[in-house]
Length: 91
Image 1 (cartoon, rainbow, N blue to C red):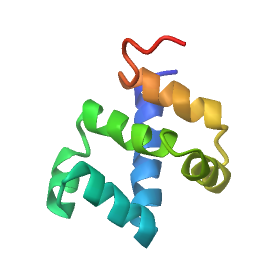
Image 2: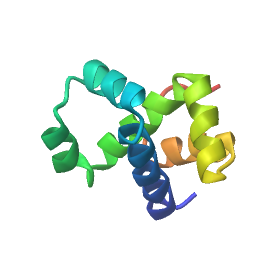
Image 3: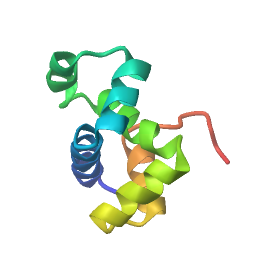
Image 4: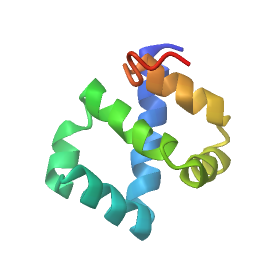
């Protein structure tokens, strides 16, 4: 998967997260970031990977995102890996 396509998925993911009050609040609490810090880091590949990591770490969230966007869950995982997620976690 190309890094550009992976970034597109990550941008969709942040929209999905901030569009849901429960997910947004959980993401903010777990990341310790403010909304301004999120906006400031959107272009950073590591941050994009962390967004996808957040969704991947909770299967119901991953499935909901996949259903809303029409992406297969495995493509979301491929995007996460293309952005550098899971380095050293070869399964």
